[in-house]
Image (tube, rainbow, N blue to C red):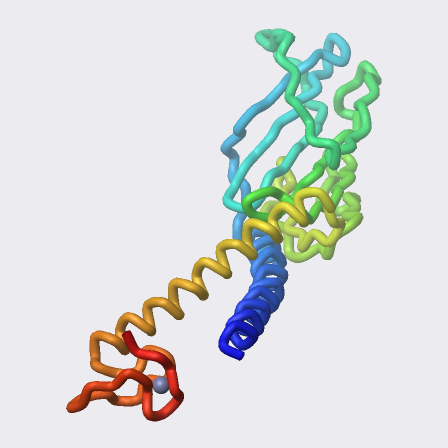
Length: 224
Ligand SMILES: [Zn+2]
């Protein structure tokens, strides 16, 4: 009897933790997308000459719960030298290779692949921009576009992503589930310790002051 009720309690706690994990994975991904812009800090970047006048710039930006890859073509300055370094890409980042036109001002390449989620980005969207008029002619796929962060030259869309990256969704859910289970166990254990310290039954909180009890008179919990 005692064993089965204990098992039932653990199963219930595990199921509640699943619900909380789903909510917190989605909540952090949406919260990061809605409230955290990437700013101008570039974590890693890569440049390559497309032609004598065009420079392909590829970068990775990071913020809590988010990562953004931007691919753009800009005017090639004299000092720009090609490097052998390649920016490693996760499989969800699929961006078109820019085409050289020889006239950088007509090259309408401004592409973004972004994902949100913690500890790993798990919901993504894609943005296809059209060069200088990005803000007016860019298109969001796989997400809900909101008021953009920035409509200047480095257009920064603000988007709630909903394209799932399944592998990292399950990894995030597993991590969140473990955190919720640990938190709930800590709260339950903490409450039991406080009740014991106050001379109460650790299970139901019934006052045991002024008497020696082997069992709680209220709920029957065995008292050591
Ligand atoms: Zn009790």
